Image (cartoon, rainbow, N blue to C red):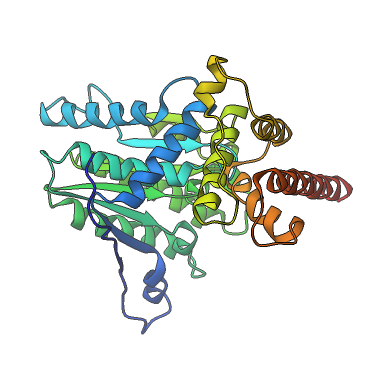
Length: 345
């Protein structure tokens, strides 16, 4: 595994703001230059543990194999009209399950794995919401401009270019639903433009498109059909929850917020060859109570526990686990209030 200093360069494309249309372009595209770095490598490791505990199979390596096959077919001149490969991966599932982070980590991992083929990698993040203009018929033009800029980057065949479109439903909204909207023709034009651009950019050998969605029922089926891989990323299982909490507790021990005390790893618990400490048993109980929470929510629990349920800055593990249990109960109760409020409406 390669470990070098972190080097992340953020750049924004901008255009003159002297007219109301081109000025909108300023914030719609961000380019992040990614080189092998320890921060994103750590994200990959954490997601590898969390995601594989959620779904049967090794999802990160599964996606890696897809990308490698895509590159191999391109290098060997496989006709894309005969063997279809649109170079699109769609990750979908509830909010907070790590879809966006997984895409970023995968872009990093691909850059490392394909060093012999490419000199470096780029991750281009699309701000979907900013592509919609208040000026009628201009949104489709903005999508065209966005892909024109992407093609400028992709022309450099020494770069591995990964394009990340978060919340793809904003751009690829189902056209039958667009008809009932306030600007149906403009929305439909955006979807048509997006599909056309994806069809055109797939001819490049060094580009891969990631898309994420929390609302798959609103995505146009023509986009779904273009996705080579449609992978569901669900809520964490109990073993995954344990791994998440364990990493949080170890971080707080390292920061000397919790008194250092060892906790058993999941593989040791599964083997059943050791007697579990009371703290480990308590943590396992908290994990059971945390079913249904997203990874994002789970990682907030230790913070809420310390902020609301501890009277001191330094705590024993035993006392902190009690505070965590209270924080989980609070989170679940608040969610129930939201659910009741929606039903009343």
